[in-house]
Length: 370
Ligand SMILES: NC(=O)c1ccc[n+]([C@@H]2O[C@H](COP(=O)([O-])OP(=O)(O)OC[C@H]3O[C@@H](n4cnc5c(N)ncnc54)[C@H](O)[C@@H]3O)[C@@H](O)[C@H]2O)c1
Ligand SMILES: [Zn+2]
Ligand SMILES: [Zn+2]
Image (cartoon, rainbow, N blue to C red; front, side, top):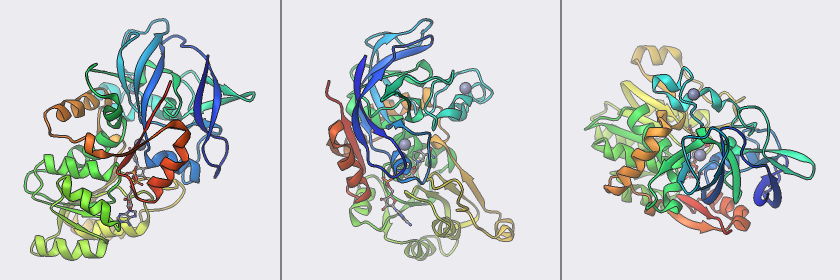
């Protein structure tokens, strides 16, 4: 069939919305009609070249839609089901899936190739095979994806809000609750209040942190952070360190979470400087994988027994945690509606990313027209 999607043809070029040829679902695959897609910074990394995928690639890895057709052997979903896509598939039986670490599923190996688990491609245009970002390519009206990327959700949920549980919400919430293990009474510092950081604020608040210090140079982000549960907000790491000193009688924060758009050695050092003895730094934000963004004194880590860890998908199990986030939305413990700052059509994809880069959005959401 024919569909329309936003494509990156090569490094540094803007998104181009083009007509695509889409193959139907093979064994274990489904055809999905996307209703909404989120503008996460990770797709911008591909455009800008901080992280280089296989080109060409159809963008978008936060997506929600409705199943149109299923291939042979599909048991997880049926036509008409409402689905939030997980940006890492979960096969259910690899070592990681079978030990409660679905975010590390072996099928995640090809998310930047964008091919199906069998190595083949479903999108084609101009005589080329196109990958799909995270094997889902949610900046397309339709896509053929693995059933392993699907999480069935209740029909009555608004997909244009639920879409944010495909990446930003569980990644940020889980960075605080699962990776940092925030506990009641903690002091937590969160560096970078975008779609990920704001959800780390929500997670830390839900976990009972007494002090949540949001750090972002942008005043609008600091204001939003306070609406989502931050008790304090400052513009720089230096201010955070001074404030945390005052809040903790010089002891330091229990946890620091790095959710800035492009991680560098300075922000990692600031996070490490902000925590107490035995405290933990969680790095969720990304950067060019060839850059050494963690440059620390090992002796200082040893002597102060500090921990520095990375987290993918906020250590969440997407099959469980995407639904959990939606349950918490129903009970009012997780805000989704307030996360959506602006909506865009597919044709406005470059505008959506410009607004992200200009710091205007907590999250922008693309609403597909069919
Ligand atoms: N680990 C994962 O599983 C995972 C998942 C999704 C996204 N990410 C990554 O998380 C990062 C954040 O994504 P996003 O969509 O929230 O980005 P975003 O662009 O929406 O937000 C980033 C924010 O960081 C702020 N910032 C920049 N430098 C800062 C600094 N030195 N101190 C404090 N704040 C600073 C910016 O002003 C902005 O508000 C990206 O690198 C993205 O690729 C990781
Ligand atoms: Zn993302
Ligand atoms: Zn697996």
